[in-house]
Length: 413
Image: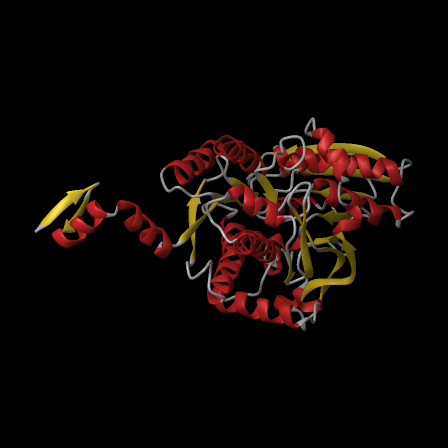
């Protein structure tokens, strides 16, 4: 005999057990059910490789936690959703995860605007939303609240690091910038300009170009940059945007003269995709120069990524790992997957060995702090795909992090 309860057919014995002790039945189910962790990202279009890389890193962290016993025997389970580059879709998926799937820990990948929007749901429903690669400072600053965390440094730290690079280059006196015209790009330029003014007030900013995120034709932007020659062009675009910018730059000879190129996030794409496009002496920030890091953790992580993706790791894989690791380890330390406030409290006390070294989370904004790098492009047959960076300088994020007092003031706290 079977009976339907909440769309489920139960045998008579199970029905009797459920009727006799519903609390015990629920407790047993919750004790065996996986702890679902949501991940929303752009899994279609030109940024799909970045999203897949973030998810791979995140999954490695989940698998490590499960191998260590999960939470008192309960495994973690990663559940992903495609936002297709639309903030509205990200909010829809976030609301579905929170209200229908009852997920209390939701991560948003590469899109900063989407992370802020879904973060508002976190505040409303008291669930933890993590920026899995959202770099705008507003995520944990002006739009921040206790139910937000981030797995990587923000535009404040990125801008400061790039400004430090230019500070050491007295030959750079005139620059232009180009960045995608949305939340991240706007904050990237704002924070970079503020940092540059502080360390090199003599540098003249000749022109600022704004491209549409996901644009395929950069011809107009390149000709505009070409009209007024400068010593350096600083780019905030990444992924497919970087590739398309470089294609147009090569076609129009933007870097045929003395103008040099600096780009944020050189390893947000496979270097093979820009190998024949990057101008000589290109410099840029790098999240994970794995071929230059000799720690056992870095080597094992790179090997695991290659095993799963059939290619070498890029920056997003290590940031995805950071996002997954900070969430699962906070849950494990708190000893609960239901008391979100207790998990958030635990998050401010955790640290772990990441691919780039020690990673710790600071309490005022639940931001992961780990090393960041700047290097100059080098073509060498000994490097993966024959290209990487050399003259690598390490920047300790903690030294450049936005002060907690300033951050909390920006929240109105």
